[in-house]
Length: 218
Image (cartoon, rainbow, N blue to C red; front, side, top):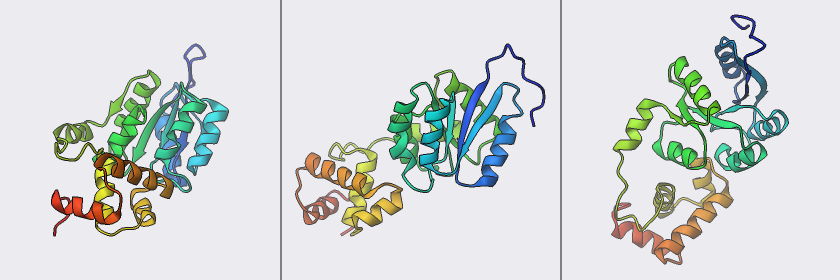
């Protein structure tokens, strides 16, 4: 229940909530709708539902969990943004690994907040996204700033570097997809890019490269 009746002259900030846990969605709705100008217009339990509701409601902000049933939230982002270019996406997740935050921001999300963050941070992220600005949880921003890219990585992105390591350790494409919450097709695409960048043609050559460059131990 809202703390007060919205002023009809104040523009309502519409929200779609996407999280596969009903209890989490209920708690988020209560948190957000305390704000007199914020209204949750739909709740989604899957990434596909999130896309459907964004198409239907064209909300100002979509709050999206990374770990959703069905398709990967990260992979669905281009379709979400195409469906409603004016919708700002805020990722709300348990995943504090820097590669997820970096990949999400590169994909065009306007906010990345961990579920452990204070309530005020999520509200701030929502308002920033609504205004077309980017919000990154401060603690995570410091972590990203401190991480320097490896100059001897063959031009690989952080995601490609991680996939190369998993390939060299003997994981199949399906296992890698499961660990990184990606589709097998996306892993195959990354693998093709890795082989092209490093001019390598087989798993054996990838393993040898990983050994020679200290990516895995001998």
